[in-house]
Length: 407
Image (cartoon, rainbow, N blue to C red):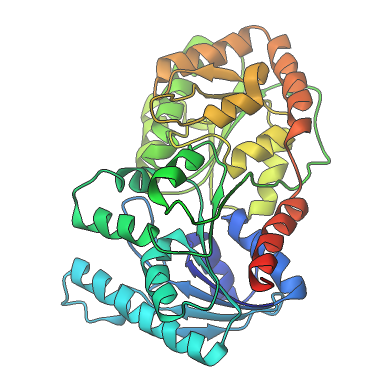
């Protein structure tokens, strides 16, 4: 199969492209698919630098497009420059519009030259995907949605022009739309955003099997947070809760925070001003393969994500038999309905965005350490019915793509 993958240049890929060594630091949904496709198929990748968004930061400031060869990845790679391609005197919004138009034409020319059998676009490029489907109606085109964030949720009823454009683009006659089951209620969102006749698949992500599951607790209880340091990930809620815990317990605890984002400085300063900075260990971004070690070494794992809690880091925690503390389902938004269906009483729930309730739940665990062991055992039993490896998960998605080409 000859496939063209068009995806936003995620920040977790930038260092790999600069160092010319494929060692991604995030987005395992995408990089595991790339790894799987390159084993048997002819794959070309176009990374589109988007350099925009309130919670998205990019260090890619190249002014020109670049062809890149990675020694340990068998794929043709081209990175399309973002707003830095244009003169800095242009207003940012104008540069962003011109960026997407230019990237569209670059991709059209690339398709005419490369002649792929299938085009696969991530949702950040769904407007481009709409036009590609119009220009190349005979080539199967798949759109990939990595869960429903607040932006995607807002396009359904918003009157803003940008939201209307994205809503219109999702109504295209795509060959298929594949979504990640991350607890965000994507199956319900698909029913409202896609044409009824468009095939759609909702897939739970895989995990890298953790062969080092610890059964005994640490002398100093270790609490882990993994995720971008942004409002929707609830980092400030988490820190405020842990500061309260530190004030009310005599037990020694070590809090590890893995991730970076726009709230890093605020989060760090909040810990510093509390006087408990020595209890917090900020690691920023680390290679994804190293995160599993921290899951193995932790006693309690906390998620404060507001958009759904079947995300990759949480699945890895589940795979590691973590004692998990996560937000209660948001039934009004249809968020974490599937999460509760799979996890039931194997995790501890707290009120969303409520740092006091989160602190109370953590204190409950600290006051009776047997509860931590109990939740570890519960989740170890619950995970058997749904956790699978990335190899199994990627094979399922590749099979969907191959069937579209072989129709």
